[in-house]
Image 1 (cartoon, rainbow, N blue to C red):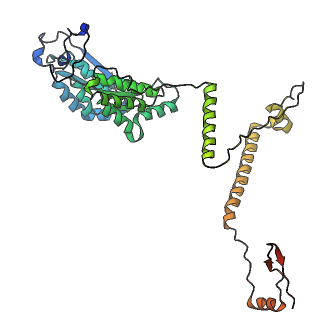
Image 2 (tube, rainbow, N blue to C red; image 1 turned 45 degrees about the vertical axis):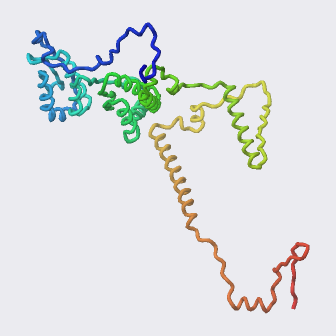
Image 3 (tube, helix red, strand yellow; image 1 turned 90 degrees about the horizontal axis):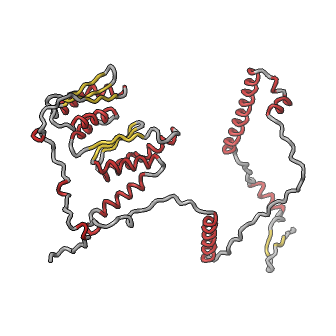
Length: 372
């Protein structure tokens, strides 16, 4: 018997072979194409925004060199604002045209040419996630899109490290490059974020999966018991009351432990309203108030002048009040002049010591007057 633990495998799965060694993707070479030259020409075209025109014009030579190695011809049309790729007689890989199409899409969405060229590799795939129509409110959309990036790009960096993908948030789309399995994870994170589920929950889940994958004992087990379950839980009224009572009880216990008397909850008695069968009096409309004040008959420019005058009057009052509050700090305190030496001498001669107070044995204050 081997030193490794014998794993119990069901009889129905004992005949199955381990196919993981066949999963490796071998590079497609010219010798693998047994069909020879393509009979027809295939092409794809995509549009690009105006602000990308300058950059594309500068790097188009690098794009052409990268595609020439696979026998793909490319064209940049600045008049119509489009890019196109097509097969030639030198093309040997039938799938490379789709890769070239994805490369043009990434270039149009703001990806740098050095990064977009990597899509031509066999183990690399891309996904362009459209997030523009998921949130109607523009301000809410901007906040949730910024949540994907995080403070100083920390959330985006965490997603890239955990999924081994390149992620670029641009306008109303998110461009992703990486392995096929990781693209699903990034798409899930992005769509959940736009549905108001913070990316940190998915990032935490990916971190736990990453640690579990290192343990060979858990390879054939379910990981559901290790993964966190985040669910929206709406409390009932009874549950809310129970939680509130627990909180109050904890506060009472804390006061008892500190040697303080428990606070009695203040209950405000509801004021009894006098019953009357008659409905409340009807409130005047805005037009009625304007008719009473005569504002209704004013012309448009007179109304505007009146509103402007009232606004300026309020501003003047507010400014005066604010200045008065600031001036209080600069008011000098009342200073009492100290008596001079002559005044002290006169007081001493007159024997004015009527204000002196002494305490007797009983602790009461007693006024003692001296007469000379």
